[in-house]
Amino acid sequence: MHRFFAILFSALLVGAIAFAQAPADTYVTSQSGQPVSMDPHRAYDTASGAIIENLYETLYTFDDPAIDQLKPGLATSYEILDDGLTYRFQLRPDVQFHSGNTMTCADVDWSLTRGMVTASPEGATSYLLGKQLLGSQATGDAVDAYLAEVTWEEIDGLATCPEGPEGLVVDLNLQAPDPAFLAVLAYTAFGVIDSEWAIENGEWDGSEATWTEWIGRDLTEGFMHRNVSGTGAYQLVEWGDATLIATRFDDYWGGQAQIENVVYNYVEEEATRILALQQGDADRAYIPQRATLVQVRGTPGVVIHEEPDWASTCVSAGFFNFDIDTNDNVDVGSGQLDGNGIPSDFFADVNVRRAFAHLFDQEQFIAQVHQGAGAALTMGLPSTFPGYNTDVPIRTLDLEMAEQFMRLAFDGEVWETGFEFTALYNAGNAQRETLLNIIKDNVEFLNPKFTMNVRSIPWPDFLARTAEKKVPLFALGWCADYADARNFINTFYDNDGFYSARTSIDLPEMQAIIDEADILLDQEVRAFLYREIGVLHHDLAPLIIYPVQTEFIVTSDKISGVYFNPMRSDEFLWKDISKN
Image (cartoon, one colour):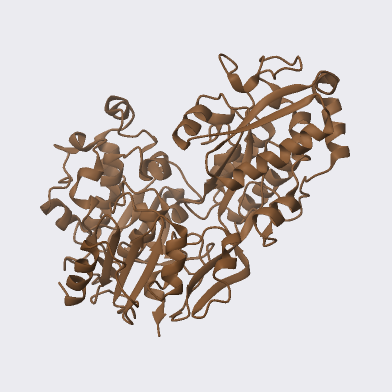
């Protein structure tokens, strides 16, 4: 262990900030959230991803800062065979793991297979590639159900080594063609792991004899939860309760990184993070809200990196529930359209949805929440993704149009009778609270017979209640797992997508387009189809997308090489920056 780390550990033992000034060879960042795990097959959160993306690598990766262009990573090339059912990758030779082992096809095979075998319900592997590789997204939390859908033959055949386990060619075999497959593979969950090192330390041995014993294992109790042997430019040194430390991997195939050491201090209080940056104790501070920038703007030694085209790949919305469970449900009042409640199909009426879309003030939200630095979206898709339709109009505050649609809803009964219901958001989320309160103010101004209550509940209760389909209107969001429109279109609009379990969305004209785009390999045609989804989003108003802020990064002026790639959990890789 370097003397530097011994000194650092001593400082941490007394709970002090690590340095009076961050050393010249060390990048120190002050972040808010602790990682969940260092195991790529368990981690499915931004805090974990910010570390893992620097320790492990994937076959193909982003050509930073572009999100729609991939470049060779641990593979040097690929070809598509068997009408889209096989992706054959040529692996990069002489790539060293942190342990000193050399990467071969066996490592790629084991890494992908182990993710599918463990099938962590909290991880990403089954959700993102289970259907493509196994024909099932079953997770390991229900072993019998998993085994009813997945066989060893499918597990064993999802990755093969044409030149043998020690070779440098790997075939990934799909159940059906997938136009987003390469984009999905760039996600951190599909980083290549040192299989020899893992097996020697008690991880799955890769055999048929033991595979069922690993289905649904709690990976946070495994060796890889806190130990890493990847191929990345940095290797893990220590992960403690308040600090994570990594150091440069000098045998990295891509050449040595410029910064030797990386330290992440996890600090809940934003004021403390800002103070660390201002005093030089940190080189970067996590500041999520643009309104907070007033506290650091103009501070000597602090730089706010921002560009007008730095668009988020997170999309948030107010979601309508098309089929509300009104049984024993305080949020729907009487459960009838009698002036004291709403019926289960209240938001199934397209005119109700159109009216509510015209009761949200996009410009007010940008000014109030994003300090004027934000943009409205035409549809439920990041503006930088292929398929985003820039030509679609955006429904915003228009009381005359809102009244017109409300008078049409339920054959005029809504306007004459009135309604009352409650919309929900998770406690502490100011943006979601603002969205709902803007709508509340305008809907109650529109007609004195209209009442929309807004309340917050704790995050676990909020997720549970929306999952029970009890919530008429709620605010939530989605951040991209991979840079393909399907990750949002299917999530928001598909009647079998992630949010369908909370909204019961059912729009046949939209569903037909989604189903067609799911199997097309022609990316230009797919993009055209997704633009049609944008047209239908405006017409059918299945959800209210609220504006995204123009993103920013705050660092000390000693850090160079900063760029913004929203598909990176930490926006840039450590190996790409330097410190002067």
